[in-house]
Length: 457
Image (cartoon, rainbow, N blue to C red; front, top):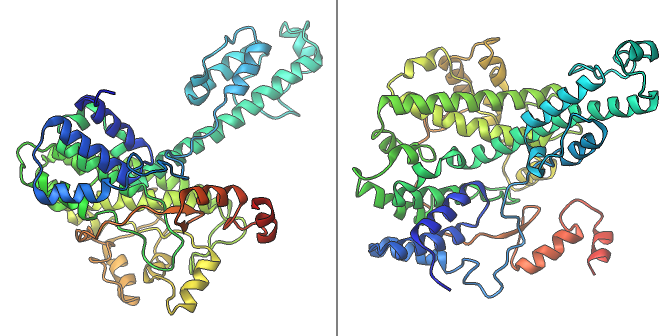
């Protein structure tokens, strides 16, 4: 079998920006990329890549991971579109991909609605349907009441499906942004223009996409020794590095120093948009069931999945925004506008674990509880200037600069590389085959343990 070309490897690395490939597998691709290019690696980089790549699936005897290698995709409206094509003469048969496109779904709903004299948004089954006289006047006398109701109900369901699809697509987009910043939006041409930058971006993104572990300590840091070795290659050749691409995932001061003011402003506009989309999802989750702000422990009725995904996206966008504002020398903006961080919701059992092990609530939770809600600040409904944030931090013993409340966090020191664990609902399991069986049986899922064990055995 012929070895892959440089372009094939770059495209596979680019594809990984929207997937959940293990960092070990990405490191293996980077090794192959440098080999295909005939690049001479310094001993530190070569040893670091080899350390990770030796655990890639291509080199393991089983070549298997029990964890999905992509972010969950929302279920589209393919079934509803197929049904609409059978009921409405103006709706043609559409390819499966149309069910994932909100614009095409809406166009079908509007076009089909014209056949039964229904305007988009007319969903009240009691007041928006036409009676017999109205159907006759509209030229629909040949359609029976049953057939008219069937079409009306389908379009009403399609509008509800469209709203859910848009919501889930926004959640998925923000989940990827929260974990991997803007990596998944990089065009291939920008990504592939600098293979060294591409290698760093792909590896750091894979590290960011790693799943959270069920623990009462800190989660694994993104910047490890392999990422540091790849980054040092960029620093050694600053004139050839595509720093604009790197800044979309790693906005440290030494990276942003290579960007023009115009590039920084472009990134600011993009992160402003992410902040607004994240704030909208946070507000939506809050409006459905307000949270217990003083503890941030999940209560019945809280949409913890939406909240935690939006919170992570908000904090990532906020950290990038702070770094960009600081690099532009516009810190005075914070004197008027300094929205706070957003903590994730915590399960009650994890909170109890923290308490019994001598810990407690993170001090940031107390600061968050005193500040205006982020979406209220973005909408201009409440003010959150830097002095207000600093005062709240001071009351709870939090350093507003080191804690990332009023300034970019200091660059993290690289941590040692550790293999990616196989997780079953956040619990590490040594063997991937065992992990797959345990997940299928519902182990660690909150189901009845005896029933799950009987099913598994």
